[in-house]
Length: 408
Image (cartoon, rainbow, N blue to C red; front, top):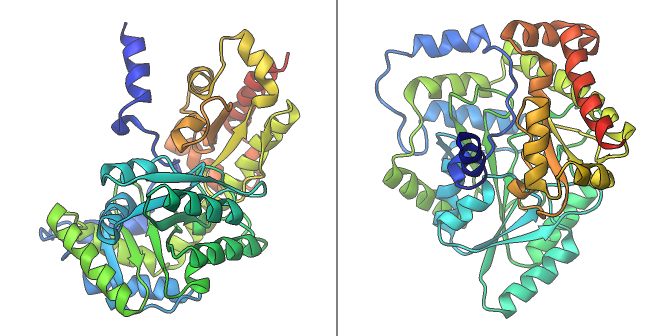
């Protein structure tokens, strides 16, 4: 049956994994003008990126309290390509939080390394519980494993949370005590919904000699169809060695940034008023819609941490297990199919994010709630009260009615 085949394919191979939540907004005219002006450029960037994009990345991090030199930066065509190169260069097994972004674990396994998932604290996702991390590293090493790297995120996909500074510090201290190199994915850092009320710190501030920072520009600055990312290495001899090894992998795999995209990336990293304004407005819009969706979840007794960043939220429908079971839904995979069919939008289950299959968790994206057309989504961006727009209200009402049916 065609439908059965699509469902099976959508669950299995990596190529059918869920993409990161998209903004659903038209591309900024200023960015379109930059890339159009460079369209005749036929040569790609050199491996690791040219001076323009690396210097712009340095200025970007400098504004966030992370002084950086261009020789400690590398650019690549998206975060997956850069992370694959970095992990391949560093070696060893990898520790990850549970849940974690859907694309992290396949990267580790593709390299033939082992991935070990550590529970997150009750308060947030993105980082491992420090005591569980130390115990897991001890056990893995006792069993012959070789954990060397900890992957974490300071603004998390899938949980949409930001770890409190004291918890991030404890996780970094545990990583330091365990001798782990930290890779901090900060792609969603600039999608924080309330930037004046939410403090976002980087592990590179706490472990300056033992942490790399990964930034995918599709998080807040560029469209996902223009792949570009940068990574910041420690300014140490070991950091220099790791960057050189990473460039070797990028060169061998041909993972180079397209010339026109590099120009747009450098422009966006400098955050001119148009780019910064769009990023701020988009984060506020997705924050307002995520908060409304969160209220719909709580109203029927579902669980979810309050969303703080990104274009999504992570819902636990375990309190609705009885209602779901009456509809033949008993695990996250079946929940993904059930909600996706009724909401008309992807709702990847927790199993995609290395969560337990039996836990009834899903990631809900806010992008589809903004409207069905570019015009509707742009109207939501510019509205004083986006929740009052008829098409946004209809989307939220549909979510509420689908959830309410499960509690009856």
